[in-house]
Amino acid sequence: MKWAISILLFLACIGVSAQSKMKLAAMQQGAGPGVIYDGQNAADPVNEVNGVANTQDSANATWSSDTGTGVTNGTYCLVVTHGTTGTGSTSRIQTQNIEIGDEIQVVMDVNKRSGTNVTIVLATADGWDVQDTGTVNSENGVTRTATATASNPDIRVVYGSGASTGSSHGIDNIVLTKLN
Image (cartoon, rainbow, N blue to C red):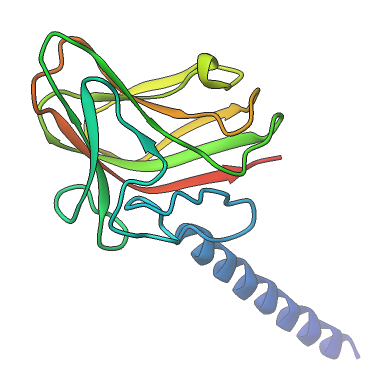
């Protein structure tokens, strides 16, 4: 009888382990519990299209979609390109399905194509409870975490005033996960 119980426990553990691995694989592909980004653009790991929906240009930077440097998931990536040296720029990635009080982890891949580094910011002025910021050269798995104080707060993509003309970065595989 003890050996039968041991076998049942062993089989149950194998089943749980397999389920956990499947959930992890789904989340790594951008799908799974709590994953809420629905950009429907070149950086969306679930609904990728050749486009720049849910982004906002600034007066000195523009978004495009491309297949070159910066693609880490799928076929395309978003590309943000800075305009004129001597003038900073703040472009935005717009979020969806975020409500006030949602604690959100933002993960994305950012790869330099040319020029100056870029800063990825969750800003209090855009509806986040803390200013979570960091300059990025080229890095997969850039992570920022904050709680929404407004519905659908933006993610800032900032080039400082010292950024050179034509500086650009590929941004891909954006995953927003609700933590609470």
